[in-house]
Length: 171
Length: 450
Image (cartoon, rainbow over all chains, first blue to last red; front, side, top):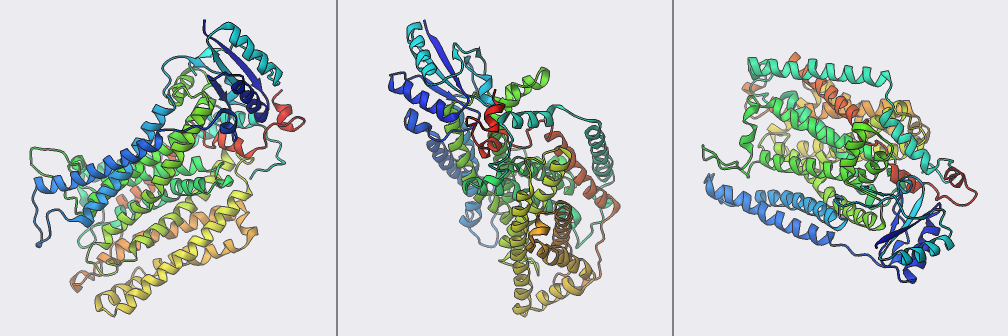
């Protein structure tokens, strides 16, 4: 039966150290819940990479192409020759292209963020309300009760104030 | 920023910001009621009057077809410029002093943009056809002309409004989660929805950090492009005193300048009336004062260039427009603008002035009066001094309807901002905490976590 162990810390360094010890002991499903972004998480839990930049890049690329297509397409659909100028002039259409590049880049970034951060939350996940104020929580998801007890022992040794199953809320 | 020796604890920050959202005194309701009433009386009523009797109810007539509506449009777009732009620049440069003030500055951007967009609708004789500016297949087989700077405007402002809204929302998600846990009833459901289930895990912080930085990188050039494009509305016309290549940087600098002054005004009000003295300190006013000084010098330089370029061109139409602007019927307004935007801000050279709250408030309002005058002069003096002297006798004076809508636009902005301060945490909870020392054994922060 899956089980969770949660350790609450009053200092971020203690929480990071506990997370590092759990990682070294072979616990992979770790979360460090904190009221602020912590420096040094990657040293404790390993390097993180995200796909957001790809969403930003392809969003911007899509926006640029569709922006130019929009401007050029409308010019072709509604021909409006003026003073012998080209039907598809590049300088003004590049402005539309530029704006659409940024617009879709922004939308792509948001989409990438939501997907990679797994938001909005649909299923219930372990949540520690104190960690939104002034505590730092280390949560471990374990496949068995024994493993959870072992994780709880490590957290206790590392100075965790409360160690036990967390309240499971919608977050 | 508010200091390593500050006794503020993490819990204090949560308490103070949540209090600003849920504890509402009679003063707030009276101010909100006044702002809503003024919006209805000064903004919507004259607008409906104008719609009923026609655009002639405004004081505009040929050749003055832009009037205060477009001056207000440029003004509000300009005011929107420092909020998100400054926030992005300071985020990328990792400036800690940004953290207590950026949320309100971004809100200023958002609401200024909304008011600016509404000024376009007011300026249209038949705003119910505003959707004609959108590219969609229609029964008239008409498509918008993307070669027109007005369409550049539509695209740029839509993008900036979208980008600014997303930027302020993304930065607020962790704070919505913090407030969610402290509220009940409809507020709890609202913040639960807005926080998207944020828990504050290391992965969520990591993703937010990246996304926020990407957004900042995208929004900086966007903000610069928006006011450049607004300047091209004028510079791409063949009108003396408007057809200048300096216009884009001139508008961008002016926009950042008036926006920074707007931030000073907003910070003063928040500090005093939302009781954020602990978070918005002399340091913020000091830094904003330095920024105002730098921007005022830059703005003055560009103004001198504009005058010099017009004079050096030697063209009779340019010289006539220049003389009219400096010494014509609107001359006193020009010199008032110079006094407010070029001379008075030199007081910011003195630290004592920069760190005095009331003088800084007065200066920020004076700068924005001067900047509104600048926009009025751009619109007012150019169209009444074009090539044909038959138009030269006209003197454009705004009608009561126009002046009322101008005053109403300020009330509309205040209404939106007053609603904002009760929904969004107007000071960022998590970023202010980042500037505080982490709880160490024996420290006041440690005691507070007991």
